[in-house]
Amino acid sequence: MLFADVSGSTQLYETAGDDAAHDAIGLCIGRLSQAAASTGGRVLKTMGDEVMVLFPTADAAANGASEMHAAVDTLPPVYGTKLGVRIGFHSGPVIQRDNDVFGDTVNLAARLVDQAQKGRSSPRARPCSSSRRRCARPRAGCTRSRSRARPTGATCARSSGAR
Image (cartoon, rainbow, N blue to C red):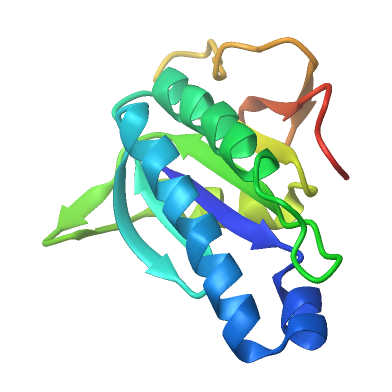
């Protein structure tokens, strides 16, 4: 489960006005959706300047996050504001009803996006049923951290990302 939030949108609305900001954010959401689909993700919904995406695996979500960052990086500044993306994802069981998902995995992924900084992703994988713990395969620039006192997670920073 992955959430991606467009950062810089509030500033853009203040400086560019509603119409220009809405158009720029719509383009950004479109790029995020394309990046998700190209890596096996299914966009379940968009909420303002945020997308909610279901991926089949934690690795697919990590790849999707990388593609999303790259897609948003190609967008030019709008009225002096460079949009970015903050991404949080978590791997674990979800309850699927119609075209929506529920459960602790979804709630945690939503909280992780709030912790991510512009140009960064905050992933976390679900613990195994045994005493062993696992997390999404660390990528270059990843550091391990603990959150919510259970599994060990990885916070990944891209080397060329904006802050």
